[in-house]
Length: 327
Ligand code: SAM
Ligand code: SF4
Image 1 (cartoon, rainbow, N blue to C red):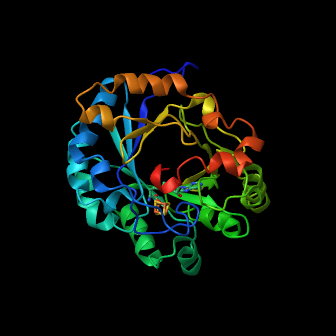
Image 2 (image 1 turned 180 degrees about the vertical axis):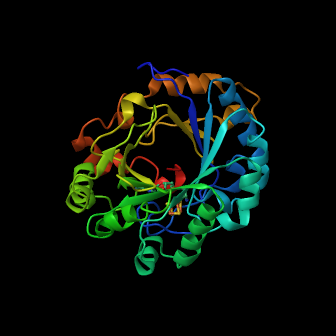
Image 3 (image 1 turned 120 degrees about the vertical axis):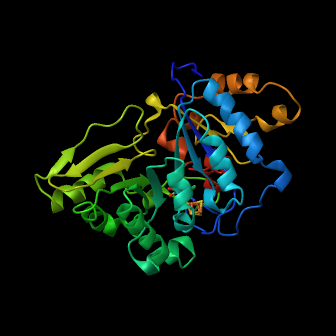
């Protein structure tokens, strides 16, 4: 799966559901989304067939996401099936249901869990997620660490809301082997994005330099990593900055995305999508659709290659809301 820019696609992100037990303001429009009818969504078997085909085509890593992947009732069956494939499996979750599924996740060899947590303050957590689950998520993070699971924390930074917590998050890495990942707020349909809410890479680095002069260490990034990685000298954990808006990482992109309704998106920002579920259900090969997606992939952010295009609400509102893409 090589696109016209020579990028090889080895990383598939599968959204298992459009549903979620939280309502994050940056992800889900205030008036909710209209959910796809159940019969339009991939079944566990269909997910397995499509994923198997992608593994045959060269995918070596699958991430399960959503909506909230753990609200899907047949999650154990899906995980069981996918774990039989020769791929690394990972998961991004809001953490609310992780404790219940921990034995299952461990059984299938999941050693790293990415959890979204945008604030270390209970009230702010409630404000952003519109739900009161802070304590449960925080206790789960501590449980995972004590069980030897590596935890990555995803934090969407929003100016004036949680950018005053950057150092608090980094301080967590002093004694805990956590990876803190600051993500720039990205525009999607209905999420009230505007560029004044962005906290960019340089602002984060400036704050860190101010608090830890001479202690900031730049770490080596893994190949195809979307994050720039750093640590504070002497601290156990590390932190990273994912700047998809101000400094996109498109030239090394190896990702494709499968939505819960079986559409292949060649880029998080692309408006284009091709259905794989439809050919699958009519006994046709999905290959021509995969080839089409590869051929149509833009060099940068689904064709939004300038900040003017990215800031144009008419363009980003043509994309799905994040909750139906899968992060
Ligand atoms: N429910 C799971 C969770 O919250 O981790 C998985 C799905 S969520 C859509 C995946 C990731 O996308 C989360 O880390 C979330 O913070 C991130 N995300 C959602 N909307 C975003 C936005 N507008 N800008 C940047 N990141 C966003
Ligand atoms: Fe749900 Fe995750 Fe979106 Fe929050 S970011 S609404 S937890 S899918």
